[in-house]
Image (cartoon, rainbow, N blue to C red; front, side, top):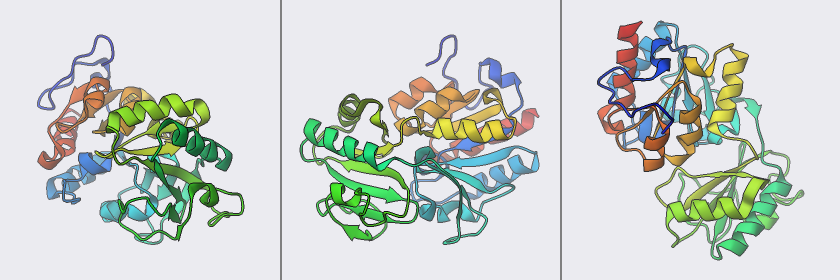
Length: 294
């Protein structure tokens, strides 16, 4: 937790200096945060998002999901319609609807860095298997489990998938996914950060030992900061919501931030406030309070 700030309930005004600054942008994670566990957006949340946009507050979806998994919120796009995907690796225009999303900004993971990360983590955690997420393609090693909602475009060792002449060589790599079948998820994250160092940014959003590895300095927070700077929005004017370690940097950066009632302990420590769980519409609860104070 930041110094001189207390974790607060979403049922009262957060006791933080940023509480007196009207928000100009809401940045919200999706899974475990805006979405209920069944991956739906509740009618209450839909209404709260629309009311925020109507009040002149931009809403950014900031997620680890790839662009092709954004159908869950495509019907709820208002105003600019931009989303930050892949933990900051891409800014995507959702206006085109399912299958027609446009990449506005890409912050790729260099293949050299990706290969270094794969090798370093193989040595530090034998048994790790990998998948490669690109702008449009998804590739994985044969032993990588079926964790995702799609069939991979190609099966091969990560070293082949990431080769300069490998499958999907014409597309930028957004991130690599590293899965271990037996290591504790938090221990795996700590181990991988020590092993990989500054060659890449490592985080996680899954309850399993599944890591998400992006380019150096690429995170939800850093890409959100770029998008805000383009709009003349300061971090004090941002309200952010999240539930997992890949949200920590964003919650620390934002002027006011809320850990969901179902959040990971690291998220609770990073946020300046708390709200109720995703299944109880925690994001909507806070937005409604914000709008009443405008």
